[in-house]
Image (tube, rainbow, N blue to C red):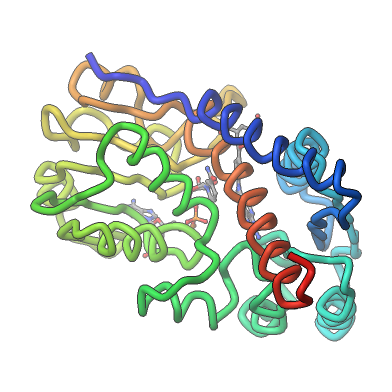
Length: 289
Ligand SMILES: NC(=O)C1=CN([C@@H]2O[C@H](COP(=O)(O)OP(=O)(O)OC[C@H]3O[C@@H](n4cnc5c(N)ncnc54)[C@H](OP(=O)(O)O)[C@@H]3O)[C@@H](O)[C@H]2O)C=CC1
Ligand SMILES: Nc1nc(=O)c2c([nH]1)NC[C@@H]1CN(c3ccc(C(=O)N[C@@H](CCC(=O)O)C(=O)O)cc3)C=[N+]21
């Protein structure tokens, strides 16, 4: 039976560390780190992610600002909002909640974020640095996957075959880059892959980011593999579940992350970590740290 890796428990420890650092800043009467979130529209699941990010900020003492724009907002108005946050010295991190409404060109908008405030790591400069293995803000979900691997003693992936299912800019591609940085041999699969199982059955490490409830069952998994489930879906009964069929894969995998309580809660904490990093860089730049 697999060892179940609870990201939510790890998240509690990391949050406690962050809170300690912020309590110290409070004692020293320093400026506090601030994360600003922009959301366009009122998609209920987007609003619930934002709520959990707000709660995480409050728990550790990071200030948070929320800018809510209507679903039919014009691209220019959204870009203006970003520019104001870029220019605001009290703001350390900017997050633009994705996906954006259809009328908005996502890449164009993300490119307007000041790279030094891009705590999501989606700005082209930061994604480029990720590719070059230079220091940058690492996209939170990918960072969360890597932190979970570190926790189970899989930091060095030399000689391991990692298979990532999904090639999105926010999950699949960044995860694949970070796995490569840790020396894995990486295969990226997607909807046009022929014979998906042929690849997944070879994986020592399988990272699944598809967005299809319980698609990956035991028939896709090699015995003893480490399986990281990034998917967050609602099943036909409205229950939260991953892309991995937990009950089917659990007897086979060596390690498995659950949904909920796996990668998701760690993602929110990595956002806090990136915000703190942005704050520290900013304070250093102003000679205050
Ligand atoms: N826990 C967390 O922190 C986070 C979780 N998520 C969750 O992760 C999942 C993926 O998110 P995201 O990357 O944004 O989603 P996208 O829809 O952007 O990407 C999904 C990827 O899966 C591929 N895919 C779709 N169907 C299949 C299939 N049948 N076989 C193989 N590959 C397939 C797509 O291929 P193609 O490119 O060819 O279309 C695409 O590359 C979602 O469930 C999302 O909710 C997302 C962000 C954070
Ligand atoms: N600019 C941007 N950055 C993102 O990082 C981003 C985004 N847009 N858009 C949406 C996706 C999705 N995402 C999740 C984060 C945490 C959980 C999470 O904590 N999930 C809990 C369950 C939460 C619940 O109960 O609904 C869990 O898995 O245990 C899930 C999903 C970040 N995303």
